[in-house]
Length: 558
Image (cartoon, rainbow, N blue to C red; front, side, top):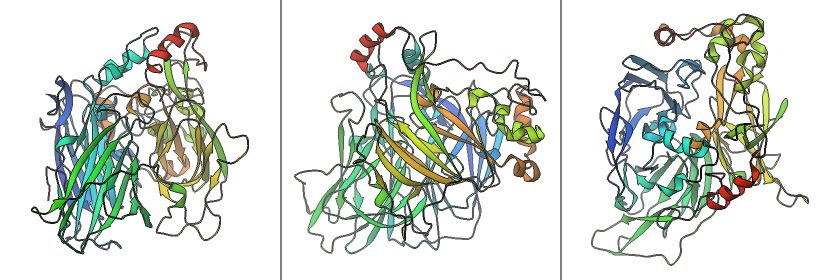
């Protein structure tokens, strides 16, 4: 069943099936009902917002796509691990070619996980333009049965297109900031101040699914007079964890259980608060508060709280429900999440001062067609910042942001354990926090938020052969090159992976080569591959940079 309000009812589940969605991806000119000028966004079947997709574990999600845009597109089922279907992960020029304008393509995605997910555009940051829809996968054997579940999907809608904002941020000497054209907040597709009430019956248990489809701001969910128990994070079930507030970064998902009161004499409020965390103050935008009602009796009075709690999520105190002790790493990688400047004074986002650019050959084809050279990272081009990982190898990542920027870091194809957090400027070790090493099952998730001047240590087991992205989920950062690749078990890929003809056909339609290294050669020759710009940590024109920093923190080092 599909509810346009985004509020989901949990009905008896039926046998596994094919859940078919027919999507004509189109331009839609709209202001989304907001007090701002309309812009050309990207919707489905001429509509925004996109409806909620609902399925059950064991189903196959079938996305029949027609591209009515004048540019390529692709779809990523965010959080779906795509075991044995890496070619449907939807990252253009990584695990497939994009969908050419005027053509059709079908994703067939087995749903082997339950939980809260979403589908969004993964070409040219089309997520920013509205190409995004919640995906909820139910489990008939869910260990946390409830009477009903509600979904809150939060978006930001900017009056400028992504291309305009990227040009603004990457033009040397430009003084204008995208924050001169601030966004508004949408909740379940409508302006936040129009958010709808939810209805509770006495003594019943409810599941609240929280989904951040935002491009930038952090936000929090609270409910007056009720206890919130976290039971799902990024599609992974957890042991119940009592919290007063749930903080969300872009691309993150959390479910909480709420036990209703026994009396109907009083109604309450829930709150979705957009934070001024790393963004400039803009009245009623950053921060902004949106209040909704929790109705027991339409005739009862509403209890108004004197204060609303605010706090980051303590990930190190949350345990995954399925026991797995902290993984023992086979290798460790240091990833400096930073920005840099080219010799032309252009601002780029980077990992270890390498800014990402796509190869001429989709990386999945390079892994499959280059034989024993597939284990060499250079095969995928230096501009993809690739690491090649052995099958079942345990990798530790030190995600490090010593700058004034924060980053929601998302890993495709895997979930990672959150092992340690702290400050990058800590000389005493007082800020360092780690998970217990015995009888504790660290939280597993696919998107971790790294605050400015902080780090996180995460570990994952590379048990999913394929080519997978790790990137920042701020759309602006991704658009400026904040991305890298992990090629997991290319030998296993060559033995077992068969690419569907429809995937190859999209490449042929667009004249994209499907064999060879990043430059399309069968040797260690990379002539013609995208050039990797040399980046420095400081702007060559540092004096003019200071003026821009004072004006707008250089257009988003937040």
